[in-house]
Length: 326
Image (cartoon, rainbow, N blue to C red; front, side, top):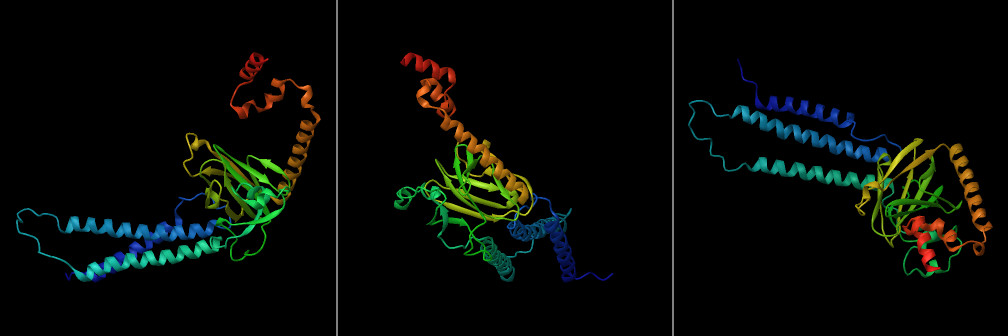
């Protein structure tokens, strides 16, 4: 029986490895549901890298298994192996192929980063409240209307090539503090502990941090951006699927870092309009209640009672301190 040429076996093995790696790379379930316009771009890049990784794994591990069987020690064979000192073509091959792969992946990643908005040049409209958080800002000191727009240098994911030089449909100021996210809507005055956005809207998040570095990460959007103290950063995206998705701090920010979680709720346009109206009415009523109370008519403990939680003390402790002072 004629022996099958090594080149034919190599061709068959290459076809099998390619088919398996492509199938696994395109049909895995490692990523959560896509919910933003940017998610397919990231997943496409991830699938390519995962396909290459599967192929390399099969080639390397398969070669090891074949060599273990083919060149195993046989009983009675005490001869030395072939004295091979090197193989220049093989060394060039296994150096050149990874180099080409890395270069191509680098070019691909730059293209994805650009299409997501990573190359959006610095200088974007930001609310005055966001600019005012920058230390040493002379402009911020003159701003009193938080809805007024000002140009501020930023880093992060900005407008995509399709939306470049176009204002976002919705701007939200996001502040990270130990250990929570606060969302302020400058156009409506709403402040919330959750991010509410309409599906299909071009949303711009102006990120900042009050204390230490935090990282705003929405796995379903495939987006993550650091929030830095004193340095405004930006995250711009379009949600494509209504639902509730987790928001996670992806930067170790202290002892309770693991609990720094909230959620982004993607509404239909009608639901978002209803949520916005309800919250504007509710916050206006709360403001009227606060204004209606005359501080002069309150005792010290009554005046400070609503702030005990922020001060980190209990109401009983506050009462005892006030009594001792009086």
